Image (cartoon, rainbow, N blue to C red; front, side, top):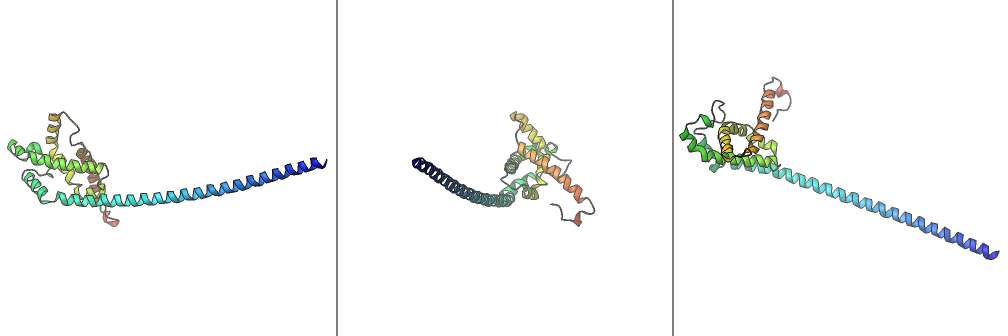
Length: 202
């Protein structure tokens, strides 16, 4: 009988020790999980800070790139090309476009017109892919791009027909349409007598 009692006590003791070990293990595991969660949260915070920094640097680079672009577009080389074009091309005259020029005038400006349109196409592609800041680019070129595209449309149509490729200068066409709408919206705002009461639209 004493042996049975002893065995019962031993079994009870083993069960108690097992329970204690189990509880201690659970608590230890809980601490490990908590520590891992803290480390993960810390890493997530570091990632978010790094993302914010990268985003700020990217935004700054996009803005800086547009300013550099505007300087390049106003460079002596670019201005010479535009000056030769603007001997005949009045971008902002709605009664004039490429087709209103004489054949000799068209031949004289074709190479320069192609250069300017390819340059503007590069800008439009860069804006599309978020390389340049869209709003700052609009401040510099918002009126110019739609005007040049409108004036050059007959030349562009001929190039597309000749090449059998309707996607030629597609990016500048899309950007021109977007900015033309934006220009109309802005003109409507500026035409109201109260637009100066708030922040001036840009």
